[in-house]
Image (cartoon, rainbow, N blue to C red; front, side):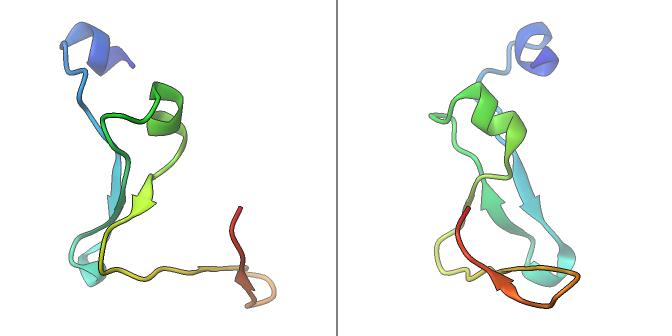
Length: 64
C-alpha cells in the first residue's frame, strides 16, 4: 500500500513463482481490490496446473 501511495504505482500486482515453474505461476490483476492484491498470490496463469497439498497428510486439498 505504501508503494502505491508514495511511489504512485497504482497498477502494481503480486506474482508468485519459482525457478522450477518457469517463473510465475499465479498473479493478481490490476482490477483486483487492494485487499485481494495484498492478501493473496492471485489466480493461476493460463496453461498452468497447480494443486495444494496438506503437508501433514499428503492429501490434495480442494478449492478454498
